[in-house]
Amino acid sequence: MKRLTKGLLLSLFAILTLILSACGQPHLSTLQPAGEVAQKQFDLMVLSTVIMVGVIAIVAVIFVIVMVKFRRKDNKIPKQVEGNHTLEIIWTVIPILLILVLAVPVVSAVFNLADVSAMDEKNEDGKTDVLVVNVRANLYWWEFEYPNQEIVTSQELVVPTDEKVYFNLIASDVKHSFWIPAAGGKMDNNTENVNKFWLKFDGEKAKNAGQLFQGRCAELCGPSHALMDFKVKAIPRAEFDQWVTAMTNVKEPVQATTDLAKDGQDLFNKSCIGCHAVTPGNSTPAAGRMGPNLTTFGDRTTIAGFLEHNDENLKNWLTDPETYKPGNKMTGMYGELTPAQLDALTAYLMGLKVQEK
Image (cartoon, rainbow, N blue to C red; front, side, top):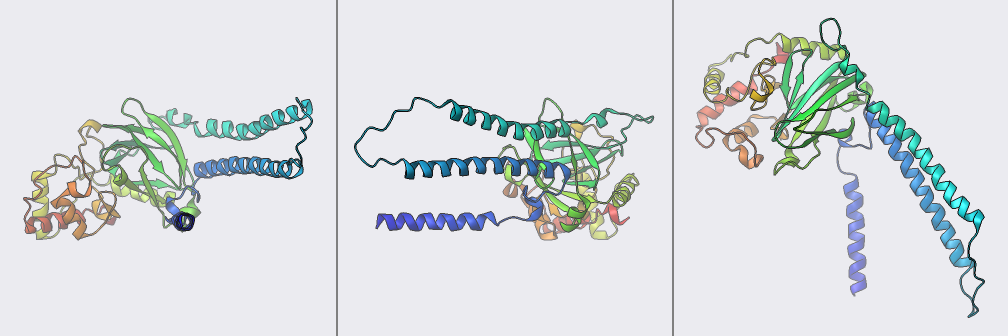
């Protein structure tokens, strides 16, 4: 009976493993690379897996042959073999060759992926010819600054496809880790130093993914670590330039157009403007950016990085953000907002749509 129970449990776990292995979406998987860095890392994983599986298979075959051919058939003591120089040379040389086969492409990829020299090359205007994004991680949200374009946004990273995008990574409070699974491996956001790396998004694969990828924090940073997500919009260069133009044309906060939204804007200016900017300029020092930039809030696909973008979820978030993201730094008059005030704030925030201008 016990053996039957163990067998059933083992079968159940095997079935669950197969089911869970199929969970997720293409833009969340490192096994479906959508960029140059991710493809190189995937190829290295495949190479190392093939080598390891090959070694295991050969050892298993030799083990079976030895067990069958040389199994003991009587009580005689077999001939004692103290060593075989030929075999010893073979099983020493083969691992060295396998290590070399793996080491050469790995070392080459490491140097290639670590090359961020283009970030240090300045043109006559004192800017770089490549796209640079400063990524600042906070509990529990992300800020993206485009220094050349003088744009600051948050929660949604917008990048052009088919060209290298360089990143400066830093954190405001505790260690975080910047990771876009489909684009490349993670890299830490530290508080004491800046890490640099680059990614390149494949235009065709981005199109197949709806030009939207998932990013997240890959370093345990607190109670809401699992909810510290962000979205990546990978679009063609022409569309990216249009987005930059739309953002840089915003010099003043987007004005509300309805009476309800105007009431919300008045309430926002009294209670929220101290932490949240509604213009994309980077004139405010990084240390003074207390909360996510809300310039394009109405254009986003999520609320707080993970909730579906709709009026109901926004009202729930404004009512009690601690319920949805424990440990977040958003403070205010939660629980004191009347239904009318919630309606007004929601109307104003949902109307912050820079890209429609």
